[in-house]
Length: 58
Image 1: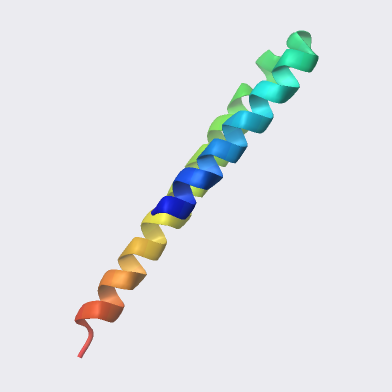
Image 2 (image 1 turned 90 degrees about the vertical axis):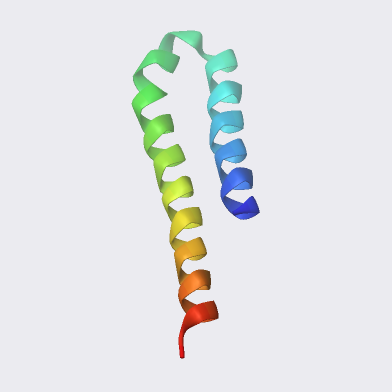
């Protein structure tokens, strides 16, 4: 789950870096930022579920 947090941090940090360089284009990239956040979180949740399955598999 820590990896997902690092991934979200990279996505948002890179978005903010780009938005500060070109504020006019920042509005068009907001949806892309949220998609990146969703993918990073989904991979974290998926890996957590796989870990649970491996722990309790018989």
